[in-house]
Length: 318
Image (cartoon, rainbow, N blue to C red; front, side):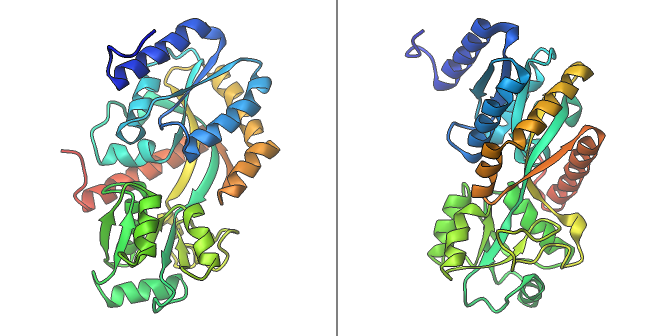
């Protein structure tokens, strides 16, 4: 089939349909709502490699990017709930983006199968910043309202809301400067165009080790091994305000419970395989398993918290 007569998006959809019709119901289709090559895509490809033999079924990866991951999730929730289509997702299009833009699905439209990984965002400053830990960082920000700038992954993005959530807990304020992702944020930070880096850990790790940054705070309740000197939110007395970059597998609502249970077990086992563990460790992340009612409750609580924060920041969809 030639794509010359179609738009890129239409060509992608035709390709996806072609894969599905050839493979049929004997294959598990994993929709990844990102372009190929990113961290989420890479991780779920490693998981698929480990899960295939355990499931005894071929696994087809389908990248369906766009609109912050919401196009891929929308396609997943519309799929036949026969247990042969799932989505490998991260936190953004599940609990964050639906509170800042209109999306064609709600939490009731999918079943969380299993969470497989977890990593906090990190908050780092320049070496001459007048604080050396999380409490000192908050004190400095409170003392100087709106003096400091922090880079984010865009208005209403996960990094933006994670930082705003912490500052709001202390009635502190800083000015957010939106970028397209952690890479652009890092470049602006290293060029001293912004005062604070907010993003995932891997891009900033080497610069902290070289003394070009001080990472003072992580957005998880507890500290992480990759940055032992950075305070966790428990150190600040606000563990319930954590925002985690987690990844999980979702299925359409009405997918049979026995199939959900089987997939949960398969992906849990795959996540603990050496190659999958190494992928996360190299990225400063960790295996974190949650499933069933516990995972649903966690997602619902985070969805609600992000909704309240988006409302406070006037970021709700119109």
